Image 1 (cartoon, rainbow, N blue to C red):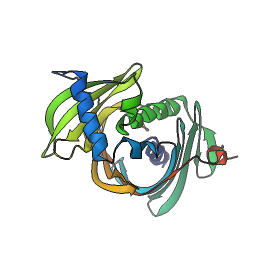
Image 2: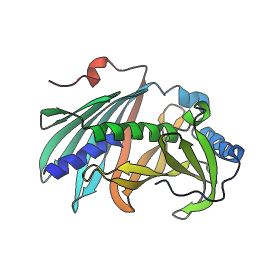
Image 3: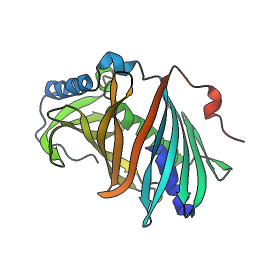
Image 4: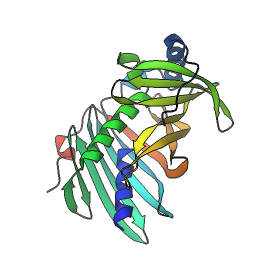
Length: 254
């Protein structure tokens, strides 16, 4: 049971391959510009970059089991987040809460509260970086991001063009976009596996784009694989943008 709960914490945290044949940054920037236009345009995306709430459902595969969960998430730029995860294990309903505020974090499992471990805080920072890459508009504003093309390949049967994103002291992230629709279909990077605390090659497969925010297309479904093995399936059911959350949302439960 303890390992199941540790795996559940990985839900709250949401493969950098060697690049060959790197082309000019201008080519990579053109790919990103088309992708931003495909999801609604820069102006519309930036309207929703302050804070949001989201609801999702899905399952995680660990220790030979498939565990169903629901997720209520709160996020506020630049570094606050909270995830309320309800999992179902052998007929038992268990609530896991995980929250981060800068360099601090806390976790509640079955009502027992403890400070987040150093590895969990560092992984949260890594995931913030990855999300800042996959939201795309940050790539147009943060001059520390470096873009290089990865050439053409396929995600499943779909032809894609790849872009590698690098930033000093942060993990590389590879992005793959549908050549026809210009929508993001896959990201690759390195992440921490929540049970072993070891780095894994993680990839996210994005699909079923919907207008979850007014005028903005978002991938409502994600499949997450660790070292080539299925780890998680996630479906976003609701996203709401707000100016900011009340500070009490992220406050540590006593």
